[in-house]
Image 1: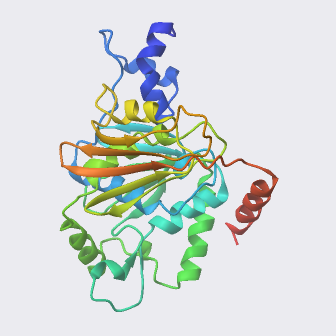
Image 2: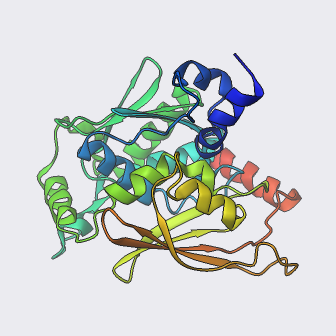
Length: 306
């Protein structure tokens, strides 16, 4: 039932995931508590979600949706992601994530593979299903015609001339080596960026263009938004509140409430469960979807299927 009280109980989850109240209302607990955002139960699921998040960092500000994600449906054993129906954004998801061999010798096995090692897909009921062979991982992409994915990946097979690893039903030796090398990283991304991906809408500001990026830096991670939300809102949604990721603020310099329109904000977060630091910056670029932006996106969308 849609009542002001029930709307309040789903409000922060809706803000963080983009889900609709009508879809969440049946999940409300019998007491008066708010609806939580479930964490990935399996370590491999969390790791894949984190690697997908980090792999998409080059998407940039292509829409109002960070990473092109309109909505997510987080469940303990799977994640469903609604991607914006923009051909170039869908192309970026395929091109940045699907693994391929670099074809170049290297002393670091991670340099032998572009994309997410071991990632495979199949087109099935409900969308494009991403997985790793032999591992309990489930991520489903929806929101765009499945034929777009087919056209884009067919072109990738032609362009990369055998280097695309989708045709291998199991892991290749180089993929396994790259995966194992990443396993030794002292700051594993799964516990940090799986919860963030499941709350990615929390990083979106009110503008028409949003971009969220992250990478490893100085013994932890760096995260940036070009036009993120007001810092108090972000801190509430990623912090230790009922629906948050449990991050703690160790330092901040916030200009959100001042009249200096283009000043940036910085917030240093700490994930107490792992001791991993995430240094966040909000550039507050004030980007708009002007005519030049629209023309550029039209050009990129036309190229997505070439």
